[in-house]
Amino acid sequence: MTLWCVLLQALHGFCRLFDKERIFRIYLFFTPAVFFYKPETVEVVLSSSVVIDKGEEYRLLSPWLGTGLLTRYFGGKWRFRRGKLLTPTFHFSILEDFFSVFHDQSNVLVSKLQALKGSWIDVTPLITSCTLDIICQTAMGVNINAQSGQNDEYVKLYTR
Image 1 (cartoon, rainbow, N blue to C red):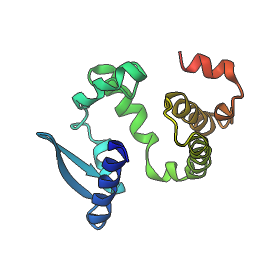
Image 2 (image 1 turned 90 degrees about the vertical axis):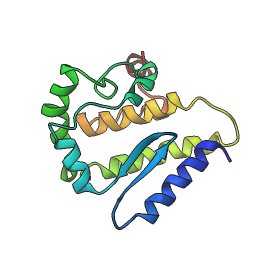
Image 3 (image 1 turned 60 degrees about the vertical axis):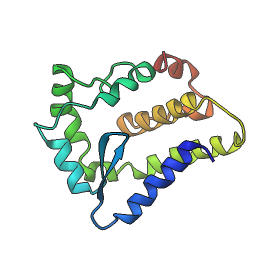
């Protein structure tokens, strides 16, 4: 079992242990990390105009994802987009409409990963294609089937 599997299982165990409160704190080396997964708590944090800067950990994602909306960890561009555009998007009643898309596309990804079981692979292209399928289907209402290899020209433009 890899270290990531052990960590994910431990995290899942904490989630089950604190299911009633849906919030817990653990220390990763000397840095506290707070995990919360109660919709009301998440909504308070996402709609806050005070708790707005991202942690230093987001710098680790920049080489992989670039400096876009997710990885821009400080500055006016992040503040504007988060406050005006991102927060209303993640209202939980809106996300409920997309659960079926998340479920369907995740199943495609899981089946692809199961087919590759036992070998070391770079999951970046698989996750990128799944993300692209989800974004296009939820935001634009178009299923581009990036995970099945269709629309390769669009996928290549997206992953540049």
